[in-house]
Image 1 (spheres, rainbow, N blue to C red):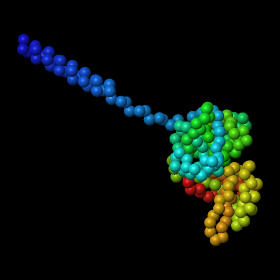
Image 2: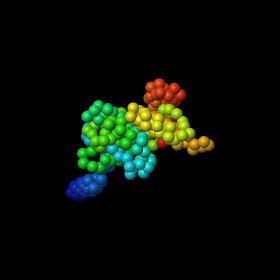
Image 3: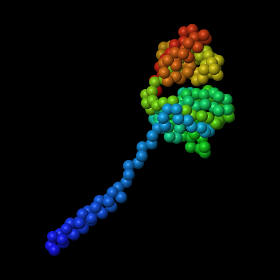
Image 4: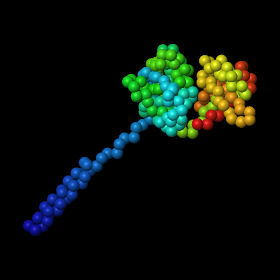
Length: 220
């Protein structure tokens, strides 16, 4: 009889211990799932917009200073450093941009392009366009190098600006970069490529106009 009581008591003790354990487990919060970045080749469609002033010169969400003349974009969820190709479905023009900011936060818009990127796909005037976004890959969010082609360096700023205006429609972005020194010079740079090979290919085209054109690296 005593042995039977002991066995019943032991069973009760085990049952109580199990109940306490299960109760604790039910209250334990599950770790949140880490969002998985869409693989290269993923496609998204929607409305694109673009932004320039007054955001030019302000800090972007990834810590960089936003430059509307660089080929960048804001996206709500893609990781910083993601490289995407954006195609304007109304005219077939496309541009490759790097995600460095967050947005847009308006309606059904899916991406906010920099002014340079918007110009390349022909949506400066309309302001918005239906686009297709293809994920090309992922690079570091900060410190990613890019490359441009230097077409010339001038002491006269007006000459540099004239060359920029002549080429901007065909090889956007084209910009004038002031270089301090004695004397001060104004460099004309075309393109914004993620690899040196792409920049070299652009340089080959531009040497018809500027035989001394060469590739330069743009530090973030």
